[in-house]
Length: 207
Image (cartoon, rainbow, N blue to C red; front, side, top):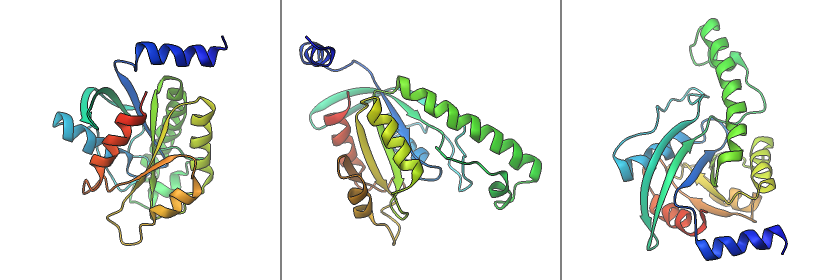
């Protein structure tokens, strides 16, 4: 029996994993930590990390373990992993535009680069991925394509989150058009709009 069929047989017989490692991936400032905080606050009453308008606020993997989610008639226990933002280039001068000194900006760039590498390494340990995209921006970018491609290559289930519906120029349909092969859920992590629908998708497709 080929190994893929054998793996499928084991999943049908023994069911899903007891604890799902759910990784949040995406470019900087897509709203990953805002969404991670919303999920964690809904089910544990505690946030995951700090949010900032400065890119690469999250520079290390932030974890919240043993979150029990009940959605779509199912109970799901998951470890939430908020990943540093993925970028093809980290420029310290960008941080200086947000008021950081040159020394602080260079240090932040160094930590951000390390965070990108760490996030990529964690792909080997993630069971299911939420790929968070800013629905006010063009989704067809090298970063998004690279993230999706790496997840697909590892056969990790993907749910794309079209975030920031609360903004006037949000266009989630552009994300659906760019990645029609994947499930796309429209949400506002900031206001909580449609996050319940996201829980239903996680319950259905996480493994």
